[in-house]
Image 1: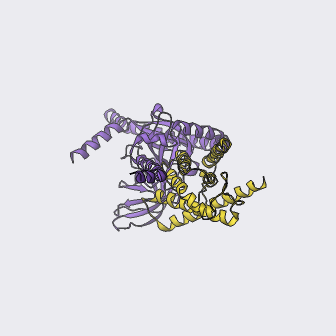
Image 2: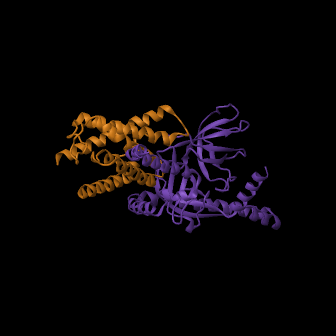
Image 3: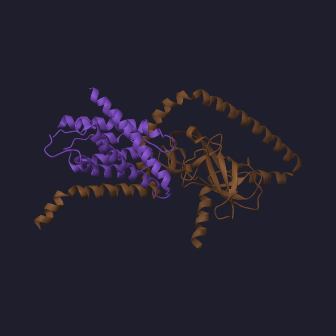
Length: 284
Length: 167
């Protein structure tokens, strides 16, 4: 008996080792499944505040470029509003009062937009995340879309009170429902790793006609993004691995290594849509 | 003893901050990341108890994990390296050393210290990258990542060693 005890005492560091490795593995797996894991990421308040402070300082160095870009973006927006007003007045002229009301109601998708700033950002891993300075207190919740003036950035993965973790498109687990602009068939965007400027559409239907340079936009089916948020453009087109689809290499519009000023898209109807979809799954 | 512990804590904090704020942001050629906080684990005195080594390794790894959004991965790899460390060290030392013996280029020669560090870093990076990509599983990029990161970190280990000799 005493020799067993001696043995256990002499090798007690093995038990500590197994305990610590156990904790590590729980963290590795919990991170993929549970929201409480936010505390062990840079979305926790200590790490979040530290990153926010550093990013405040860093922000000053890029103010000039940032302003130029914002200016340009504003200009583009004004242009867009103008074009839309023209289009709207054309509709008003040609449609009856009843039709007019229909158009207005139909275009109301229930999206509200907010701004956020990236305070930490990685692009060099297999699974990249961006920490933003808005959290559940600012109305951020899981699955909200995040984009910048160039294109889609990612989808909110976890939200703590004042910060949130965004799963970037540069993440092996990200899937984004997309559409080729000017074509109605939809497809899925999935990142294949390593290249931070490109991603792949893995299931383009074969019946469509696509060309290099075609613009890819969000489909609007995922309830994270409204339709027609730009994503990227086709640079290469080939057969998919099983030959049933086309596979396209996409140049992403957003520069992920410089993602800073972001917009969030929240859909007030999202909850309803999610409940409806999950009830269907249950019935199956 | 207390002075040693204080110095340990100071090195721990400095290296972890440098790691999180500077080195984790740098990623050479898409493969190599230097984890310089490991230098702290390499330089812990020989007499440090096995349990203390494991706890230092785990907490250093966990803090880096929290800042880099890789929960558990660094902690697991650094704990394993802490376990293997003394076995690697005993290859270059003999029994009956003074209590405050610290592994360095001076105490076990440049050759010994380099091999000791390389073995530790290889252990760490092999586990780290295996855990990081164990869902995707590409062998060649994995090997490139392990070897390039080990060599990059080794460079910083040697630079640190050169500077600590001048004192």
